[in-house]
Amino acid sequence: MQSYTLFSLKPRIPFPREILAVSLMLAAIGPSAIACEDSEPERPTKARFVKHTFSPGSVARAGGKAILGQALNSPEEWGGGVVGFAKRFGSAFAGHVVRNSIRYPVAYFRHEALDYRPSEKHGFGPRLIYALQSSVITHKTTTGRRTVASGAISGTIGSGLISRLWQPASAHTVASGFSSAGISLGADAGMNVVREFWPRRRKSQGQGAVKDPPAPTSPR
Image (cartoon, rainbow, N blue to C red):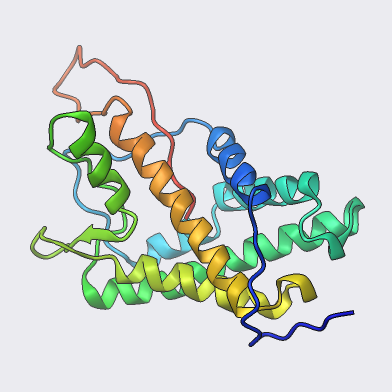
């Protein structure tokens, strides 16, 4: 039997199972409200870290990932049943905590907004490009200017690599860590596209304001 270590560079090819998992996850997240396009940028505060890390929604998303992993029997070493589900749920939630534990401090010190800001562009192509870029590009909370989303990127890569510590042998590699991070960034980009083209919600202007339908939020 071939052995794997954390520092092995042999890639573990995740496709097409993980692609299917991401697609199902995007479809199963369900509608919930996004920020108004006129709202202030979301600053990375301690209160928001606690809210977005330990909220019922975060638990539900970890459960959704565990269900997908259970259905796809990934990783195979964890098997099925209650024990397998518990391992997948614990892994998903722990990875989420690690991601936010890196993401928020980096974003705080670099003054990076953590929410998605709809574009003011016109036409399908420019809006699509903007949405895809927004998984790695964000805005400064101080000036509003666009900047590299170092908090989101470092949090995603860090979580992908650190989570290898509790993964079974088949996923206990550096390559698998980067693969996991890539899938997460891809899922974020997909959700940004949904949010860009979803009908936008505006602040109420007194009575008679029309409410637009809610849009999906991305996992945090």
